[in-house]
Each structure stands twice: as structure tokens, then as C-alpha cells.
Length: 497
Ligand SMILES: NC(=O)C1=CN([C@@H]2O[C@H](COP(=O)(O)OP(=O)(O)OC[C@H]3O[C@@H](n4cnc5c(N)ncnc54)[C@H](O)[C@@H]3O)[C@@H](O)[C@H]2O)[C@@H](O)CC1
Ligand SMILES: Nc1ncnc2c1ncn2[C@@H]1O[C@H](COP(=O)(O)OP(=O)(O)O)[C@@H](O)[C@H]1O
Ligand SMILES: [K+]
Image 1 (cartoon, rainbow, N blue to C red):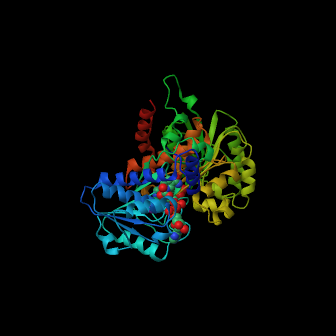
Image 2 (cartoon, rainbow, N blue to C red):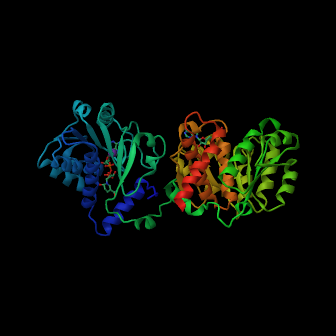
Image 3 (cartoon, rainbow, N blue to C red):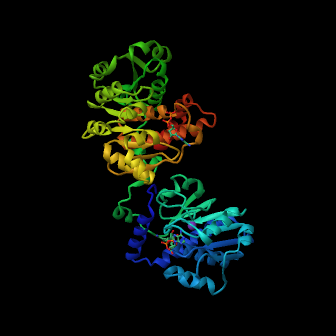
């Protein structure tokens, strides 16, 4: 159930299902029934319900829900934004059945304001342009009301593919969507408008997903858990990999240590900080379980990495930008090891992103890059400026660079060069704190050292980072994340057994 379908993919699911013999009216009946059930489980008989319908099939679902709820004895009023005689197809039929017993009313703002629950059936997948006029007024009335708001499929005004607000949008408490959730439920700002998202089965068969080629997922353990293995009884530390984190100069060594601690905590067998000679004493005096080696420049790094048991490198946090960093990145990418590129390793390639991508091309070991928006725009200026959904930005960057791209933020997107994409939704706001990104790169570095494939390691890393942030709670500083990973790992291990 982790697949996320864009409105056009959902339309395809709908068409395939209808072509296979289930009439559209049956799908609409089931959708409307699911919405009615969601309302009825939350509201006792007697609560006043207002259903606000729009001109398309989203409104059609609203007509069905209204009919079911009225049939169960709720006081229901139905208001249509648009002309009743312009309704078409299944929605027109659903409206006709409603009309046999009760009236279709125009928008009555006072009634919306006074309702115990408002069903938002204005627009769903068919939203085509920003809301204005009466539709925008209806949204304002729904948002001004005190009752609970239950949105049908999507909060009206939210773009189901991008999560963008098209002019204005309904703030829902609950959104009932059908068959599979949509990217717009998780990409910001859509996530903040959708409330709790419930998925209703309306009889669309999962095999349509293969035909559609769905490639976007919600980031959750089901996406990567089978690729992660808790320490085995017969194992030893050498089978869990040896990660190297490259440290910056004496004044900026903390970032590498944060990454190294996280790599060890997530489960890498061994972790070494490769330290510039003049920072050795600082690193050594702060590290215990993590090892430290004195490594001078790109040449020294090449010497260290000649030992191929050191199978994963995290490079970038606190490193400093410039040709020396470019040279070290080239060294790291030249050999049989997994690589996580973060922060200054990315920014140092702002003048020659193509040179970086050429070094990544054709590698058989994973490369993961973890840019925030600023770093992303330095490497992919045209993609950043093209006004694309976040999922497409990450996906295009992954295809171009050959790396798994972790485009960070409150709604981090993870994309693989083959087009698989995951949206993360478990990061608490207090995760945005100095050094948090360094910890993330270390977590992912630890996971690729353990042998996880790049996409799965990146997705698990982002999820575990969010889960650790949630467990540590508000007031978190980056140092709190690695300790909090213990609980996260314990729960995952219990789940896997
Ligand atoms: N795809 C499926 O599998 C199913 C879809 N169903 C429902 O159908 C919905 C999609 O139906 P539609 O494709 O008819 O689309 P919508 O009902 O979301 O909206 C389309 C209508 O709104 C108009 N419109 C679009 N943007 C507007 C704007 N900014 N201002 C004013 N009018 C605007 C369009 O001209 C069209 O008349 C889904 O969200 C869902 O609720 C369900 O009935 C069940 C099955
Ligand atoms: N509003 C937010 N809510 C939740 N997580 C966030 C938010 N903003 C940023 N993050 C996360 O916090 C981390 C910050 O990383 P980064 O920008 O590299 O900062 P730093 O360099 O200080 O470590 C990333 O994992 C990012 O996804
Ligand atoms: K809606």
C-alpha cells in the first residue's frame, strides 16, 4: 500500500478497472460509501452534516455520501458550487438520486459555519487551475467553520501531484482517498492540509499498478526492510562493513564526528575518521569507539582506501569547499566502495557538476548524494528553476547524476536513477537543527557499509533519522540523534523477527 499515484495515474487505474468490467458508477458508489462511513464512525446521529459538492466526479462522490448519510438518519444539507444541469455522467446520476428526496442548495455560508461536519467534495483529481470565484468562497467558508472537515480524495485546492495550493485550499481534518494515497497528501504544503489520510478500498485491483508502472512510494519500512538485516548470531563486525568519514580542518571537525558516530550506531561494523594531521589531536580526543587515522590530502586518502575492506566513505560534512575537496571526492569515487556525498563535497562541484557526474557514471557501487535545496540548485540549476514537483526534481537529478538523490527538507524526497522515488513524512520540525544533516549522511554511510543498496539505504536512513528525531523530541540537538537510533533499531529488529 506504499505506492503513491498521481492524479493521471489514478485516472488510468480508474479506466483500467472500468475496462475490466466494473462500471464507474459502482466505483463512485463505493467511494461515496467510504466517505459516509468515515463521517459516521466519527459523528453520532444528530450531528449536522453539510456536503459541499463541485462540478465533477469528486462532487459525485459527495452526492453519494450525502445520500447514504441521510438514509442513516443524519440531518444532511447538500450545496453545489456550479450548475446542477451541467453535471455529467455518473455525477449527474448521483445528483438525480439525491434530488429524489432532498434539494440541491446553493452555497449557504452560515450553514457551513454552523455544521458539525463538512464534507469537502469540491475538487479532487480533476483540479485544473487555481480556485477563484464561488469555489474560492466555498473554501473560505469551509475553513472558517468550526466543524470537522472531511475531504473527499484531496483537500480541494491541493494539487494531487505536487502538493501545491492552487490559489486557496481546504484545511481538512481527515482526507478519505481511494485505492492508493497521492503524492500531494505528503508533499508540502499539501501534507499540512490533508490531516489524517485514510485509504478506502473501492475494488480497484492492485495488478493495475504494474500496468501503470507506479514508481513513487511513501517512505516506510515496507519499502526497504527486507534489505536491512539486524546483526546475525553467526556474524562479526567485519561482515558489517567499515565506513570512513573524511574530516575537515581543525576548526570544523565536529561534522565528521557526528556522521561517524551515526554510522557506527546504525550498525556499521567499524568506523574510521580520516583526519588531517593537524586536526588529529582534536578528533582523537573526542572519539572512542570510532577510530581515527591521520590522512594527508587526496594522496593520503588514496593510501588509506587502498585497503578495500574500507567499503564505504562519507565525504563533505565540514570539509571546506574548493579544489582540494574536488580532488578528494575524485579519489573516493575511484574505487570499489559505496560513497555518500554531502554538503561541501556537493558545493565544491558547483562550477563543474558534469565532471562529478562523469565520475559517478558506470560505477557498480552505490553513490548517494544528500543536498538541501541550496546545494541542489548549485549542482542542478536548470532542474531547480524549472518549477517541477519535488518528486520530479529529485528524479531528474538522479537520472542525470547516476546517484541516488536525497533532496532534503521537511518532505525529503529520495530518488534513484532508475526512477523509483520515495517521499518521507516522519521528520519532526525540530530535526532542522545544526548538524542534523551530518548525522543523516553518517546514517546512510553506515547502511551502505553494511551492504544495503543505495536507494534502500538512503530511504531507510532518512526514515530512521526522522524516527530518531521523533523519539528524542523537541529540544533535540544533533548529538541526541545517534543515541535515539537505539530505540528505532530495536523496534525495527523486533518487527523483522
Ligand atoms: N479515479 C477514480 O478511480 C475514481 C474517482 N473518483 C472521484 O473522481 C474525482 C475526479 O473526478 P473528476 O476528474 O471529474 O475531477 P474533479 O471532480 O476533481 O474536478 C473536475 C471538475 O472541476 C472543474 N474544475 C477543475 N478545476 C477547477 C477550478 N479551479 N475552478 C472551477 N472548476 C474547476 C473541471 O472543469 C471539472 O468539471 C476523484 O477525485 C474522486 O473523488 C471516485 O468517484 C471513485 C473512482
Ligand atoms: N521543517 C523541517 N521539518 C523536519 N525536518 C527538516 C525540516 N527542515 C529540514 N529538515 C531536515 O533536517 C536536516 C537538515 O540538514 P541540513 O540542511 O544538511 O542541515 P545541517 O547542515 O545543519 O546538518 C535534513 O535531514 C532535513 O531533511
Ligand atoms: K475534495
